[in-house]
Length: 228
Image 1 (cartoon, rainbow, N blue to C red):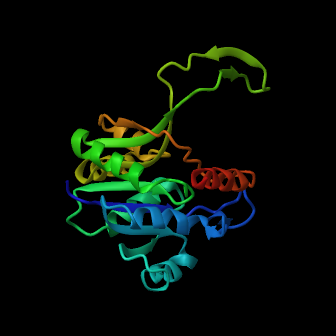
Image 2 (cartoon, one colour):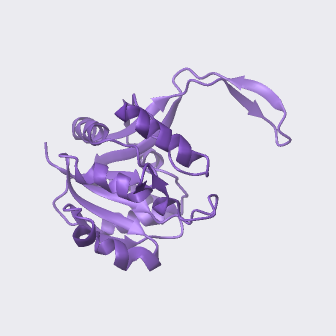
């Protein structure tokens, strides 16, 4: 299996946390560093591009030297929206990678094994995403927060990252998204817009995205539970 190129999306503003969540520590290591370590240590990944804010490009571009991430190719500036950041990452990823894995920098608990699982699935099916089944009871409410009906959770999944696809499929999807002015929040949506099926890879381990302050102690507890 050919190794995939990875795009780590780390250009968010962290408005909901009030501070830079990617520099927040989880068991002594920064969120983005933990994410990078998982991809750098994954045998299915051949090169990594980090998409970040303009003020961090120079710092992160040197992480191959300062942090020892041997697979880091470069850091580039992201866009105002996630899909624009991914498009910039795709443009910066060198030719030769037939598969591309896109991952949220704020999902630091992903493991090299789960990354490899998604790359393998994408090599077989064309596109794949890490995901988990919805287990909670779901309700639909109105604008005032009043419950109006239930949502059948059968066959409902929550999308995670990495989301991996053959490069030509992903580039075609983002060309379409940009040309049509669509706003998509992940690669599954972009691929679906061009009629590409995405195979789901079930994740047996928690892989939360750090979004709110309470996510940090939760992620640390989950990480420590893996060590016990």
